[in-house]
Length: 260
Ligand code: SF4
Figure 1: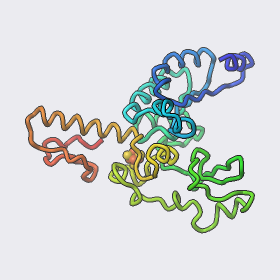
Figure 2: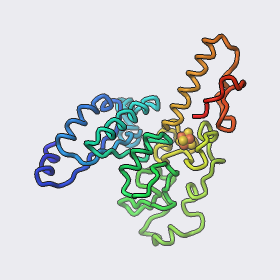
Figure 3: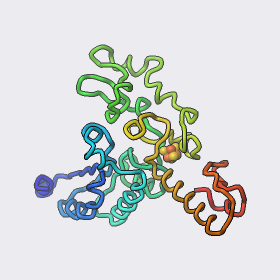
Figure 4: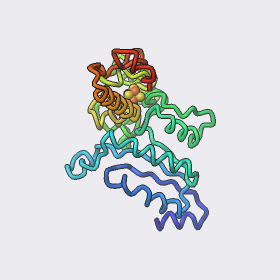
């Protein structure tokens, strides 16, 4: 905070990034006040993924958020955005296909024409990362050795980028490569499962992303509908699957508004 206050005194802009975990989630309101008072211009929210120390020590591992805690993050972020005192940034490992998320992204994007909508991970497609030892990866957040494309000390960057098969894990990625909820998701073919680093650290592969707000909210809605069906004494079953993205039930009676 001292450094932020010094920057403010010198009229220099500052940005804060909060890696969200179970410990700091309840402290966000306090933090907001501190950052606003210190004149912070932008505040980025990102999920603390189970990588590095957070994946090794069991006590720290317990700090990793569960998917069910995502709505709380977006509620908070949207409130901060609406208050307008600080520009909110939502990192790529938080999303997807939520109208508030898109609105925040549109506002905070440096690109004027940005729709704010997640259009899949661009690692190895339009961006790349170079690690301190020269390893070339699709994105510096991807720290899984299987995704090191090559090393600059051995191969020129142009060759790494343009050779056949380069970054094929993402350039050739299709909905057919997905499993679980993502495979059936109506946004699956654009989204391709959200952030790659997030999936690798939480799922161990790239096939499904339980840390997706859309997925979490959808499942909540299904649970709620199942509950109401039980309350109504109906023996109809929620089949928990997409049917053209429209009807989730075996009767039209309860399916009219079930397309999230
Ligand atoms: S469920 Fe999967 S494919 Fe659908 S929006 Fe979420 S991350 Fe993307």
